[in-house]
Length: 336
Picture (spheres, rainbow, N blue to C red):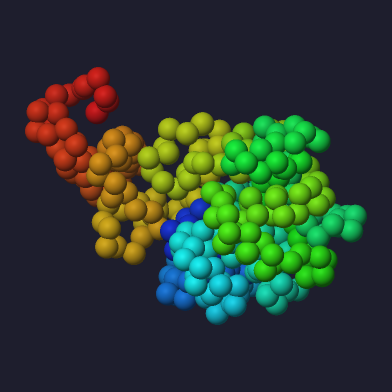
């Protein structure tokens, strides 16, 4: 069997998305051995191990053709350099993927970096024989950007052939040889760009990547040839995105349930509870709509305990957001 390394840079808040992604990869690629590399915070390792990998290993619907390794990004010098420069934690986590490939103990000559907001809908075997043509990494042209047309990133960086860093296939040896990770980090420290590592790679190494076909980074739409579906700007494991496009939402729920069949285990209103999804945004009307969707879903599935749980939470949220009068009104111009 052939092998492939896959890289994630994540924290505990992305477990459901990453779990659904891995489940979808395993489902469509039973003939590949995988080694998953996870860069995360030390305090999140136990949670991710238990709630994601142990669950996947015990899933009788999947072939457990994988192993996994954890890495604590905070021990790396470039991580500390970002931290000492005052870059906030969210941007540091995003930047971790820039210096992760050269630190991974791999089983193949290439590593596939994936964001957690992706699903695999087909075989990724062609990536095992992808020809980099001397480039250090491969990616797809950013959705909406035209080939060979300069664009301004973040309104100020003129870049040719802008790519999305959510899916990157990396030639490990070429990356170590040709990519100056510290130069990328210095750019982030100096410019503090909105899209952190993605902007850094696009600007510092302008158009120096091999092209992946669009089917490996299909933005918010499923086409006949889609292999990797990227639901950009919509974290479908957040219940307030329950009304996303039906086809991509259905696909996510299919693999989320393959990863964790009991939906009540990955939705909670309790801030302090160690859960995969947290629905505690009381000031957001979408929380109320999502709770309504959930109690109807529980009733349809005859899960009466779940139905009562989400019904009571829906009532609580409606009182919190609209007051008692809003609760007494069966319908309103802003929805129930």
